[in-house]
Length: 200
Length: 228
Image 1 (tube, rainbow over the protein chains, first blue to last red):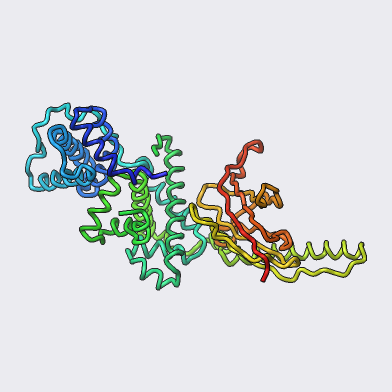
Image 2 (cartoon, each protein chain N blue to C red):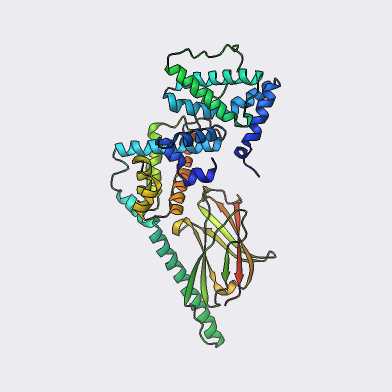
């Protein structure tokens, strides 16, 4: 069965067509589908969570106004269009231009995107540090620990790490996959201990 | 930008370190905008990176292992795992030989000896033809099949060897991963006569209630051909 991401071009084109036809449900689906990714992208660029939320809201205002009145050149690449709008708004913000780049009415975005930045928002820095400690202790060998250290702390590239540690690409991929998977589980456990809701 | 390329080219890590080209960055951002799983993977990697840097700055990641950690490191190392597996296999083989000898002595038959052990790694490739084909072991040979239990959050496993047609030949309960995180399934070579088999793997956790069924994890096909 194809993954949802494999169907992205069809889903995107369908959303564009339905929004053009006036479907408010489709507008909501678009906001839910791309909201989390847009917020992550904007937080990464702006380093300002509040500003990122504002820019995301404006991105959807611009996009919905556009999609209600016209079709995109490449509706299958709706994600690319949204990214472009978001980054243009960010550039405009940096230039001290107004962030109100649209005259859309205030109810243009009827579906409020989830304001959470990600699934591990409630995991504290100390919990992340503890999870890292657990992960490092559970790794099979000092070599595997060094692999993670070189990759994430020293930003060395894969080829250099493989050569330095005498491991092949498959072993590298396997260690990294297992480490990230285990770390994700540890973060989920920490999130549950925080008594907060988990998504996904 | 597909998953295979993202994994092979370390796109997530290079994105976090800001070393993607502009074109790669654009393609990756468009990909994760529409893919919640990829976005979560990115967020996990970002926190792992931040946590490692944080721990490194605090001297945790670089500090020498504690005595307990060293003990765990030794016990959980692949070398220890392999050695322990081989010792266990050798012990099992010796016990089997003694049992056979004992039975032979009682029956007045000449002594049998199981002098060879073969380790065979099986792979499980979804959607691929059966990639596991081995020549039949000698009847006196001990065979250990290594099976990858996958990445689920399980700590105990059961493996069942089934011959094509459904006959259950061997059931091994209480298995735990050993060498390289794999399960070692030891069996007399004489069990694996030419034919088609399947290894059915299920997993669970030690703290599960006794009445809870294990989760089915997958089936690994195995074909045994005649010995040359």
